[in-house]
Structures are given as structure tokens and as C-alpha cells.
Image 1 (cartoon, rainbow, N blue to C red):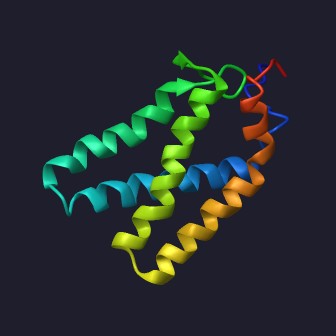
Image 2: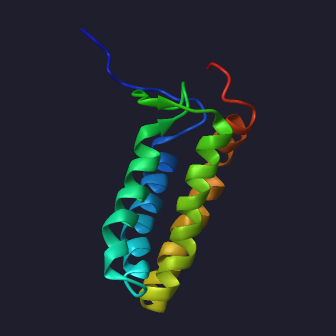
Amino acid sequence: MINNKFSHPYDTVFSSTLRFAVELIAWISGPWTVSYLSHWLIIPTAIMLVILPGIFSTPNDKKVILVPVSGIVRIVIESLLYLIAIIAPWLVWSNISAGIAFTIVILSIYLGTPRFKWLLKGAPYI
């Protein structure tokens, strides 16, 4: 029997679920926000926000790596998503929805700190 389960000592199911929730918040609120500038920006923004974290990954951080990058590059990509997920909801959503999104982002940052530290160290083999 083949074990396809991927295990990561610095990432829990809960922290990775919250990180995915942050990505969803950025994927939805980011293009929504730029739609106020130009409707032509919606699709390129959505594509950029989905493709960047999906393609560029740090070895030993994910099971499938399309384009390997250093831990620092991965942190920059994720920080961009976190920044969008913090700011954009306040511009396009209700205060309650934006507050919930903000809480999810803060929880994700807090619970993802061990993984971020590992990425900052260069993502050594685990």
C-alpha cells in the first residue's frame, strides 16, 4: 500500500487550513477591489493571485513542487497574499466580514509562525 500522506513538522492541518482560507480571502477580495479601478484588471489579478502560490513552492514544504524557490521567495509570495487579505476586505466588504477576514489572517500568521521561521532559515530538509 502506498502512503500518499504528506507530513510537515512545522505545519499542522489547522494552520494549513487557515492559510488556505487566507488565500481564498485574497483571491476573492483582491480582484473585487481592483474592479473599482478597471474591470479589465479583475481576471489578471485573480490569475496572478492563484498562480503565484500554486506554481512557486519551497522544496520540503509541499508534496508537489512545480517551480522550486527559496524559503524567502515563498514568504514574499505569501506575505503579498496576507497583505491583500488584510487590506482588500476593508475596502469592499462589510465591517463584520472584513473583521472576520482580519481575524482569520491574524490566526493564520500566529499559527504559521513555526513554518515561517523554518522558511526563513532556508527551509532545511526535514
